[in-house]
Amino acid sequence: MKEILLCKYGELILKGLNKGYFEKLLRRELENRLKSAGNFKVSCAQGTIYVEPLDENADIDEALALARKVFGIVSVSRAAEVEKDLESILKSAKEYIPPFLSGYRTFKADARRSDKRFPMTSPQISGEVGAAVLEAVPKIKVDLYHPDVVVMTEIRENAAYIHAGAFKGAGGMPLGSNGKALLLLSGGIDSPVAGYMMAKRGVSVDALHFESYPYTSEQARDKVLELARLVSFYSGKMNVNVISLTHIQEALRDGCDEEYFTLLLRRSMMRLAERVCDRIGAQAIITGESLGQVASQTMAALNVTDAAANRPVFRPCIGMDKEEIISVAREIGTFETSILPYEDCCTVFTPRHPKTRPELEKVLLQEAKLDLAALEDEAFDSLNTFVSDAYAS
Ligand code: ATP
Ligand code: MG
Image 1 (tube, rainbow, N blue to C red):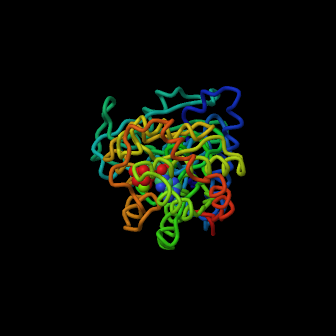
Image 2 (image 1 turned 30 degrees about the horizontal axis):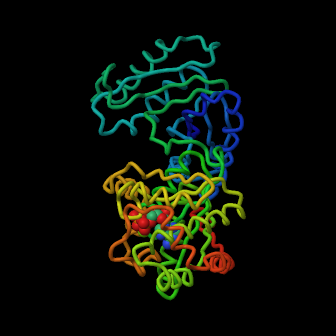
Image 3 (image 1 turned 180 degrees about the horizontal axis):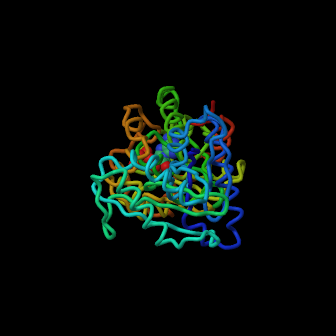
């Protein structure tokens, strides 16, 4: 008996003409990621992606775990592939399915027949399979309305497939289907979550991290690279650009009114981010800001920050409470790293009383006191690029 994975994709089926393109992106992403699990063939038919092991060493458990992290896939079932005849189907209902039912009290058998040449209707197939399961697992009961688990038989073009339930996939849209954006990645909790959320919408994400050596340490940078690696379990390989803000921060500390320090710093970050976007071909900037969380995240402060940028700034955490952001961070595995206590460039020289209702004209007057253009040129020249890739062998 051959075991395979059936990966179902959700909202992109609706996309009509783009369907082929989305399938290609998904197939490519799966092929890349499954390499570490062994030899698999990935193919598409009838709204499903088939992942077939090609030899003994292909690790199907590992492949299942990997496939569940691919954006665009809503569910993954582990299924037996059998001949399209009732006898083979019932044999696997009795032999392959029972271990998957352990711990469940009730089940329902269901069937779908996309090959209409098969001589039985779906209700007939379900009836036969249900009876076979009951025979093999006498303790389980049938519940047609609220079953704990569904035993599904799918009669498809090339074969029949039988499985007991599906694992939830990562959802969202295939990576690369929605352009490319630059994530401002700090060592905090929010920005890795923001990067994950935009990658989930199919955006290819590269990162930009600002450091302020010697006020920030090498460990702080390593922590950010590790966060990028953890996000890359979902987003795929992430290039992490690192820029030094040391001289800009010193100039701001010495040359502007303290209450404007953070705002001016954030505006410099935006202008530098735009230059990085131009270099890498990114169309938008992503940040982890959440409305009202700190002084620089009031609506007035965000307006002043955005006025420095000429492209959309995506803030997927904007309407989330900290607790909600933390729960996503835990789910994607970044939380424990985010809370390691290394300083961020935003936490050095922080003003005692930051402006929460800044006015743009006053901010511009502050900026005019400094030669920020030259300092930003110098900062941009410090750009270094690292690669964080959870799938690199
Ligand atoms: P986070 O938890 O993501 O650090 P935060 O609540 O600490 O967010 P801030 O420090 O004000 O908020 O930063 C707001 C956003 O600005 C961050 O979410 C991130 O997108 C960006 N940012 C802050 N510091 C840096 C940095 N050192 N490098 C790159 N981006 C940064
Ligand atoms: Mg921060």
